[in-house]
Structures are given as structure tokens and as C-alpha cells.
Image 1 (cartoon, helix red, strand yellow):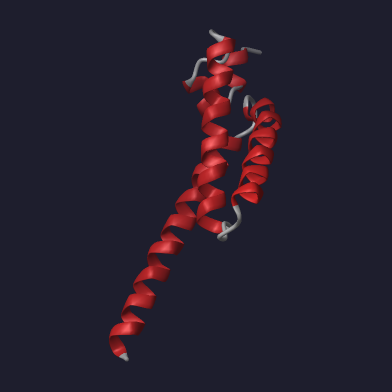
Image 2 (cartoon, rainbow, N blue to C red):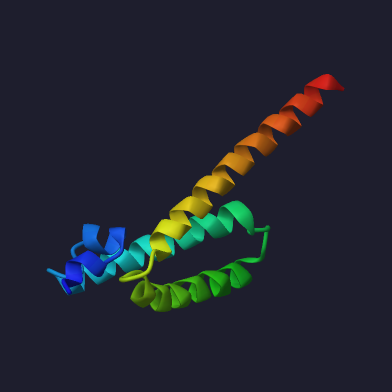
Length: 104
């Protein structure tokens, strides 16, 4: 069994098997960044600054755990799909509201 065949797409892309230190950091940054994007697109509300800091802290903390899972499981890929679905949803919602306001 070859390790490089078992890696997820982003783990293989970042070379986690050849350069683990840099690869894991890049995977961590990708997962945390995508988690923040998904949070902002799907769940974020206007919050006070301290509550926002707490949420982003826990997103970063959870990203640590997800990074270890993301080496062999498609965590980052799932976050990309979630972000794309939410982007399409936001675009359609914006178009719907714009169309509704022009009809009135």
C-alpha cells in the first residue's frame, strides 16, 4: 500500500507525504480559511467583536482536528463544495430580492 495513493486531493497537492511540516501547515490554513468562508456565507450574523473572536478561535481550534482528518479524508474538498453551494445560494437569493424589489 502506497501512502501517496491514500491521501486526499489537498493533502497530495500540498505534498504532506514528501514535506510534512509545510504540507500540514498549508492544509491547516486551507481548512481554516474554507471554514471561515463557509461560516461567513452560511451562518454569520452581526456579532460583537469579542463574540466574533471567540468564534474564530474555535474555528481555528477545530481546524487543527480537521487537518489531521483531512490528510486521508476529503475534509477540505467537502468545505469547497459547501462554499460553492452557499455561494450559489447567496447569488440566487440576491437575484430574487432584487427582482422582488423591482416588481413592487
